[in-house]
Length: 113
Length: 113
Image 1 (tube, one colour):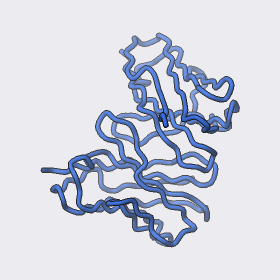
Image 2 (image 1 turned 90 degrees about the vertical axis):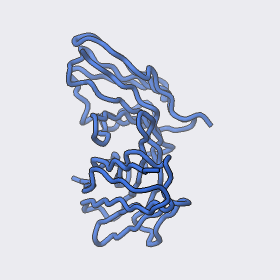
Image 3 (image 1 turned 120 degrees about the horizontal axis):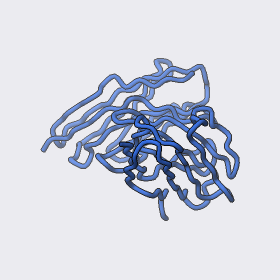
Image 4 (image 1 turned 135 degrees about the vertical axis):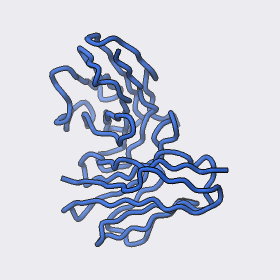
């Protein structure tokens, strides 16, 4: 069974700083996808970034980038120039082929003014 | 393009009462998911549909939960009778295909008294 672990329950940084959220996963699959989702307070889950395991290049989306280390089964999210609107729960998730998304426990990120 | 629509957004019921949640996926998305999200945790899959067919319902408590997706478009999740422990957020998501990115609705927050 696949598992996803987010070891940082909470993080807090000042606006404009860079922050990195950690995620590790465990799987025996060779072909899979990794995701970071953002869930603002009382609002819906939004896709932040997606990474295909077969791609060596790390995915980026504007201020969001990942550090994908396949051998180490690590998938961290870096947020550059953090903004107040980045305050949210961040979930790391894993999917192998047609199987279900498996989510981590989440990291509550607070951006302070 | 409209996102995943869910209703109601909030529901308060007494235990042992029935409750139903409705989801309309993004147009053209064949795969539909229902997730359960307990407070402070990541979502967990309840059931996945490919068109009208429930292809993964292994985590659905079938003694009290049921779901349907008639005509392969919108879907209804029902609980009867509800228990105190069912208080949670029920999320619906959809994707173009079973290996594609999942997009989430705003969820239905259920409180069972």
